[in-house]
Every structure is written in structure tokens, then in C-alpha cells.
Length: 222
Length: 80
Image (tube, rainbow over all chains, first blue to last red; front, side):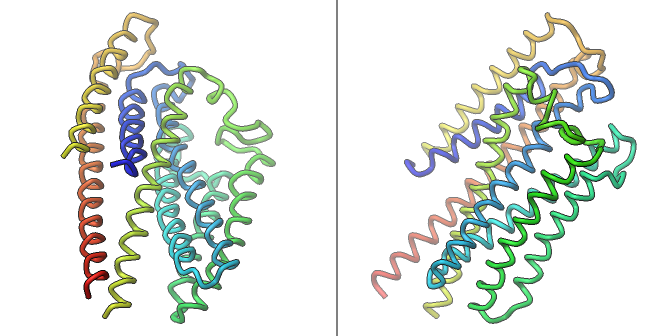
């Protein structure tokens, strides 16, 4: 029970996000209207993805520093997998929101293209990993690639969209989430949404790690 | 059992507080949208809550199955 407290917190935060996100007041904005509530879900996907990719990066570096500890490679791999799921959801939800705000599911906007490239970099991680049969080499190559992937992801998601004009808020020279983030009504749900979805991602990650460890143990005992 | 009971109690509390804050909002200035005016946003909230309860139950069930396997695994490790 004691080690499960954060899972209960995750469920509570997400119940608050789902209910409060739909019913609590939001600022009246042009075009967006009630779709501004998507900010609690769409943006949270990217936040959870970033946290998971950072977990993946840290464990890749730890693996390279201690190549005998298999667990680091396992955690790094699964964090990238779960992070990729959240990135996929972020892209799809963004596309749906774009259709109703910018008029098209995909407008080849700089932010959209950069997010797609970042997503593809991590898809390539999965492909690269599965293409190397030898265990040690697979772990080492994917750990090194993981570092490059994250180093590329940051400019693609955070730097380049800010240097250009984009339909997406928070870009074209404006810092952060500008007007939306500073709105107090949105803040009441936004931060719990980030926390809740990120914890959900960590919970999914923990389950996958535990299943992988069980599989490994079984392999060793056969 | 204890854990899921707590989760359910807490979620019901949240549903109630969420609904109360939703009704309180209607006294303030209104946004020019259909969903809040005719109150049908609650349908969406109900659907979302049901989906989320389903996901949580699934995760809790998976959690139990994995813990059970881990316990069995540790038992066999001690007495091979």
C-alpha cells in the first residue's frame, strides 16, 4: 500500500482533470471557444512524453556508465516505448484540434513538422533496437542513439518552432504558452493535468518494466 | 480491496465537487456555446469518467496480476 500512494494520487489528479477540465470555467477566446479545454489533454501528452524521454535518456547514460547493469537498458527502452505512445497521442490529438481551429488536419506548419520529425526520431530508435540481435551491442547502440535522439528532439520541439512563425501558440518569438498559461482559470486544471498524465505514464512504465523483468527471470531459469 | 475502495470513495467525492462547481459556474457570465447552455456537457463528462474508470480498473487489475506473478517468482527463487 505504501509504495502505491502515487498511483492513487495519479487517479485523483486525473479525475479532477477530466471533471474539472470539462466543467470549470475557461476564458472566452476567439475561434477556440470550448476547445481550449483540449489544452488539459493535448499538451499533457507532450509533457508526459518529455518526462518519459528524459527518464529514457538518464537511464541510457547510466547504462553507458555501468554496462553490466541490465536494468538501466531495460528502463531506458521501456521509457522510450511508453513516451512514444504519448507522443503519438499528442500528434493525433493535435491534428484533430488543428482541423477544428486551423481548418486542416495537417497544415505542414513548422510546429507540426518538427513534432513529426521528433516522433520519427524515436520511431527510428525502436526500429534500430529491434534490428540488432546481439544483446550487448543492442543495448550499447540504442543507448548511444538515445542520447542523439534526445539532443535532436529538444531543438525540434522547443527551439526551431520559436524561431519561425507558426499557427501553434507559444511560437513565433513568444515564450512558453503565453496568454493561455497566464490565465488563472486554466492554471487551476493545467498543472494537475500535467502531473496526473505524467504519473499515469510512469505507472504504465513501471508495469512494463516489471513484466519485462519477469520475462527475463523466466528466461534465466529455463 | 482497501485500495480500490479508497479510489472509488475519492472519485465519487471528486464527481460531486466537480458537479457542484459546474452548477455554480452557471450563475456567472456565460460563454456563447451550445454545450453549457443546454447542460449537455454532463453527458460528455459522464462518458469521460466511465472511460477513465475503465482504464483505471484495467491498470489496477494488471497491477495485481503482475504483483501476484512477482510473488510466485520470488517464492520459486527461494525454494527451487
